[in-house]
Image 1 (tube, one colour):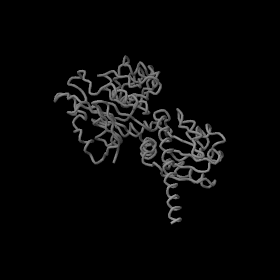
Image 2 (cartoon, rainbow, N blue to C red):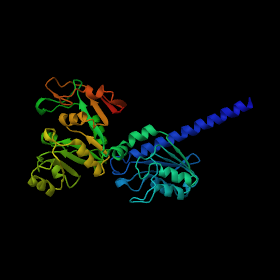
Image 3 (cartoon, rainbow, N blue to C red):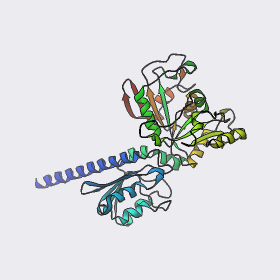
Image 4 (cartoon, rainbow, N blue to C red):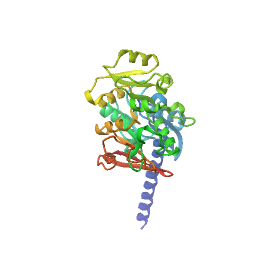
Length: 382
């Protein structure tokens, strides 16, 4: 009987330990999300340092990608890091880049145990960080909250593995599958709460992409207008094969305030490129792709080369449909309003049915939210 009691007590301690590990890792994941949209080309990592059950340091990747999360957490922990446990959402780096390896900093600080959510697929790391920590006598556990970490770091993973950004398609549709009224007439699909949620998504994206049709029709700013978060506006990308974007547009007039990349064909007029360049826009010239217009995989590869990891696509129905048809959408934010537009309205995906994504086996529901009478369903690749 006494042995059974001792075994039960030991099992309870193990459960409590695992529960504590999960809580601290969840905090690290939440901290990492603070950096989303601001750390590219580096991943937005979160880190928590715990000693005797007490948090002694926390950090997340800073704007521009440095300092790294582990370094920030170690700085805040100071001497308390010695003998502590580090919870980190991605394997500590082991190579010299623009800063020394985080693995070396963890070793030097005297950390006793490292709990990492997932390994870094970057070939310059790829298990070498964990190996270096273990060689120094540090206990390393990998895989806690790995699914959540993979979702948060999807942009980094996609850029490393596929040489393109993680593409997030945002759609706001009526119950009858429309994104706008006939002829561009004003029609509010969703309410103010959804608008704020969209602006937060913009702040968490490295760049936002639309087509020239949206620019000519709506003259958007494509920035984040949440109070206190205006500085977190993403880079703006416009697909504009013939460089038709007006110099008077809000995007061009603000090109020196937030990056504006206009993607045009190599055959577009040099004078148009010079005009936009003089206004502060950056021109990305791409090979023409016949009747299909711009080569989307080539565009995404070029954006990845610039360091973009998370790309939000907020264009009209034609741009949305082109990304879906090319199988380039990794995550879908589908907002649904409560009022129908009518048969003459603009279809969400041009000629493609909305069921192409909502009923496709290629996607699964990741999460859902409610905003009064409006709803959000987030889909991810299955």
